Image 1 (tube, rainbow, N blue to C red):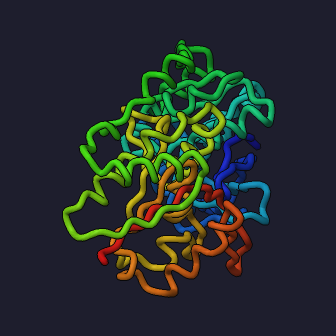
Image 2: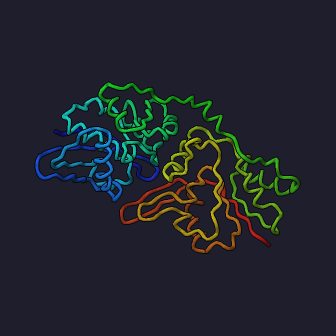
Length: 351
């Protein structure tokens, strides 16, 4: 029996659709996952089989082949656990999941069958809508994050049994709804205010001019003169983000796993203040599987470099491209990725 389920994977700041094919055949018991899976995806065979058994379902005991297409792009993370499990149950019970081709599934499975939150749900939901899916099933903790995407039903699911019973028509789920306008307005609140700064009229006037023109700023003054305090409040006088900027910023924070489940949307200008010991990769982004760095996390906001002379020269040199182009391109043997990086650079130093 062959079962087909759809999911998506994050690549850079966007996502691409992944078709998961599960074929159950005879032969010695074995589960083979193909399609360039990383270690986390390969380990899913043990999580999935245990979760299926603990949920009270049957899975094929013979040779099962699981293909993640397209096969020429590396798949990372545990987010394929849920669709793989659904495909294995369908293949084992010889069920028709043709209706599920209109859905997309993403989620990590616990051994009990519970579904845990994953990173990058917002770009995955955007990709599901782009590919014409009617609905997307995500972990309950990620439901509000995905619900900001209009034009697609978002279901927050808690466990494997609940999801499979919905597909069989035995359980009813209600899609998660968000009033995007009120949700957006509710989250556009800062913890600090530029009005907190007393005095320093010449500094405040200079910053107002710099922000109005989108210029970078260097503040020089003795310790305790208020440089850091002023810098933290600069995002509050930048014009509020529009919806497109907010979604783009939230995508980056979602990929890095920095979203709070209670505030699953970045509606205020980000403020990033890395320590002066940060590495080139930490600031620019990179590693084996390139992920966004601090310059991208500050996209549409402020990047604050305190004690500027303490930063390594090589670290400051890598900022040349993002400051000039508003984006950063990272090239590795596996490929090249481009992350957005439009920000106001604010630096501070002692005389």
